[in-house]
Length: 220
Ligand SMILES: Cc1ncc(COP(=O)(O)O)c(C=O)c1O
Image (cartoon, rainbow, N blue to C red; front, side, top):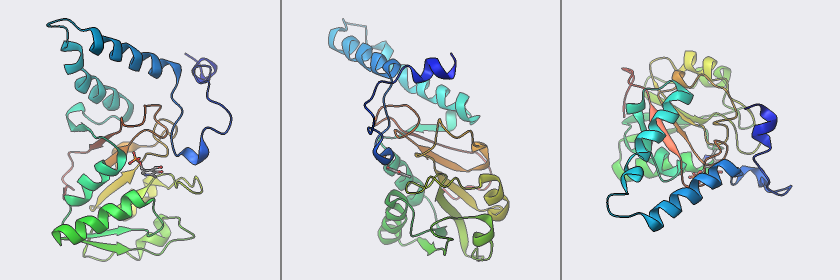
């Protein structure tokens, strides 16, 4: 399949994208959804096996796209829930920008208030951009994790994952990839936790996944 065939599978009206509040759903995905709905509606006794196979199918698809092992991929109802899970697992300081999409800042704040073990460290940015240069001097010893969106939802700014990994060092690096997964060919394995979903990965709304590395950096 080339890019023209791929683009030909989408038929949304101009303006649909609306700042990527939702992602267009191509004909292939709609066909798959319709097929599954029909199977669910008409399955006979013993015919439900196909639904039980979908979790493994999702994990192996994400593994193929990211290079993460399939057993480190989990299915989440939406990106916000995946980020919430990640934040609730961290003990210590988490550096993040107050200009992030609220799913991230909300999750950090919720975890801090609910468990009292995560401490948000709101970093100063260059007009909302987190860069290796502006982050470096703000990473104090009490900070155990850094969290950010790889692509900014307002500006489309693409963060420098390689540069950030170097600056972040052994701390945990949590990436919200929901504005870019499937579009940006990023070195995902440099992150420790990646959460992505319905905006750009051509999955229907409600089909995000998160995955994480098995590295020794884990605080989650
Ligand atoms: C960067 C970013 N993160 C998270 C979300 C929220 O995603 P979800 O609705 O899957 O929780 C959005 C929604 O637009 C987003 O742009």
